[in-house]
Structure formats: structure tokens, C-alpha cells
Amino acid sequence: MTAQRPVIAFYDERMLDHAPDLDAPFLPGRLDRRVRDMLATIPAQWRYPECPGRLQAIYNLLQQQLVAGVDFESGMAATREQLARVHTSTYLEHIFSLRGKNAWLDMDTTAVSSGSVDAAEVAAGTAIAAVEAVLEGRASSAFALVRPPGHHAESVRARGFCLFNNIAVAAAHAQAALGCQRVLIIDWDVHHGNGTQEIFHADENVLFFDIHRAAPFYPGSGALEDTGVGLGEGSTVNVPLPGGSGDTAILKAFKEILVPAADYFRPDLVLVSAGFDAHRFDLAMNVSHDGFAALTAIVQELADHHCSGRLAMVLEGGYNLESLSQGVRTVLQVLAGKNADEPQECGMAEVEAAIKFHRSAFVLE
Ligand SMILES: [Zn+2]
Image (cartoon, rainbow, N blue to C red; front, side, top):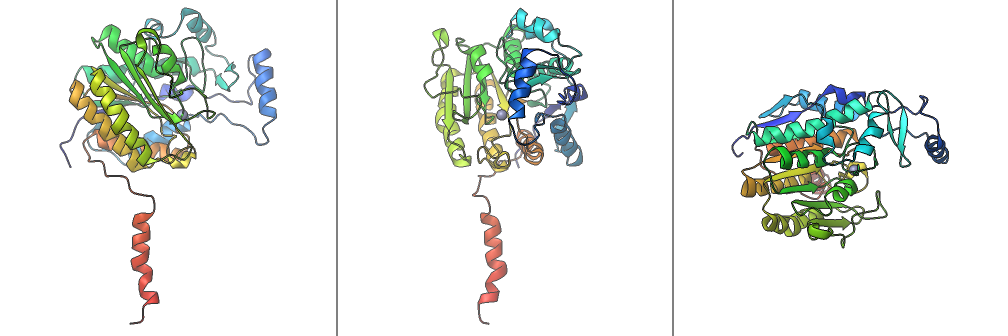
């Protein structure tokens, strides 16, 4: 066990008020008709998967099984000015006009309920609060437990259950208000962070590293050859992987692509779009809890090496409530100072124990 490091986890109940309910009447119009027609072709009843229970499961587990060194703080709402650093005014006006309403935002089933716009402002503001806590030195690292998630939201488009791009808002705030020049954003959610990439595609001061399941998996972007444009050419690093990829592949990519890229870039701040849907229980990839712990240790070491440990994580996806909540707890343990174990092939320890247990049955005394 290494020395304990103070960590702040940010949680705010206002984010539970984002709860699209398909049985409620939505704003009528073309988008409503088209989404409903599309959902009618799905044989099972479709429910909005990005639900309030996700945050509640995380919070409940962290209350039941406290992690030493982790304190909780509540979040705050982002201001219009803070959101406008990465979203256009037209887009913000549109989202604000939906306050208090049920409406579809995009064909890929992104929707709002009456409390969603307030919740989304709190999600983005809480990502900012996490960054401020780290830059003020109040914590060694911070984790913003937020929803709706953010990394699919583009400057002018809500997508993939995301309204405002929380991590982009936090990165832009660090640059505009907190004196950071170069921000490294690491996205280990199983889906490509198309929104974060779009927002910083031409920005040489944000290095965006994204490891994800390759197209045609949602959202279909994040090709290897997509490395940024204009002055940002070279500052987007995509690592698309096939479905089922696990700890060994992801850790190798972190060690042999992310680490040298970060050493070259020399960030002032490290941010992580921390989704937990790459865990094997979410059925898209094959990452284990030990795998997430090992990724966290690498990222923490990068932050220690380049920017006095300044590291903030922002929750993205993760839909299996057991692996989501355990995953967050595992990451918090490493942030708070626990050593990360080297991931082992799942089941090997149990097989060893089973061998010992059964062997005597087949051996003559
Ligand atoms: Zn995801």
C-alpha cells in the first residue's frame, strides 16, 4: 500500500431528475414520429438505458463500502458562458428552450424530460468543480459522478444520451479560467468520443486519446487515420479495437501509445472520460475491474510525472449497474493510493482453487 492520496468524488442529486420516459407525451413533430416509428421496429420494449439508477447504484455502493481517503462534495450548475466555450449559442438556445419539457433531441434516441436541462447544467458544472478542486490543490485527484454523460455531444448536436459535453466544458474552463495551457483528455469509454473529438479536432492545445470499439459499433467514428486537422493535426489519437478486446490489448495501447504521446505533449492537466461499458458485463469488450485499476495507475503516473498529479475523471457510460458501480469504486481505490494488481485471466484463481478442492476425489490414498 502506497501513501494515501486525498480524492474528492462529486455527486449531486439534481442529476437524477434527467429521466426520459417514453410513455409520457413528447413534443409532437417530425422527430417524434420518426423515432417512434424506428422504436416500433424493435421487437422488445425499449427503455431509456441511461437512467437515474446508474448514479444511484454508484452512490449506494460507495456509501456501503467506503473507500478510505475519498470525500464527497456536491456539484454545481455550469453557467451559459462556461457552456458556450464549446457549444454554439444557437445550440444552447435550443436546449434551454426545452427546459421543463419532454422531447427528442436526435434520431439516435437522445431525449430530455422535464428536469433534464437543469441536470445537464449540473453535470457540466460538476465536471468543472472536479477540475477546480484539483487545480486548487484541495485534492490529489477528483471524480465527477455525472449524468447525462457528455462525450457524444458535439458543438451543435446532442447525441448518444449526451446533451452538453461535460469533459470538453471542463477542459475549456481549465484553459480559459484556471491557467492551464495543454490539456490531455483520455477517453476509455467503449464508444468513441465523437463529440470531444469534433470540439477539439483543430486544437493543438488539447491532446485527445480515445480507445474504443471500432466502427460500425456506435457512433461509427474514431478511425485510426483520424488524427486531427489544421493546427490540431497530430493531437487526436484514436485506437479502434475489435469487440471482445480485453485488458492485455488496452494496457498495451496505454503503455505504448498513450504514454509516449503524453510525454511528447507534456500536459498541464489530465482528464479522463471514464466510461465503464468496456467492462465484460456490458458485452462490448472484455475489460476487468483489475484492468480498470491498471489503466488508472498508468494515468495517475502520467499526471504525477507531468503535472503534479493533477487528474480529474468524468463519468461517461456503463449500463450494467454491478460493473458500473464496482468499476467506479475500483478506480477510486487506486486514485486514493491502493496499488493496482496486474490483471489476470478471468477465472484462473478459481480454477486453481477448484483443482485443489477436487484433486483428492481422483487420487487413491
Ligand atoms: Zn459508452
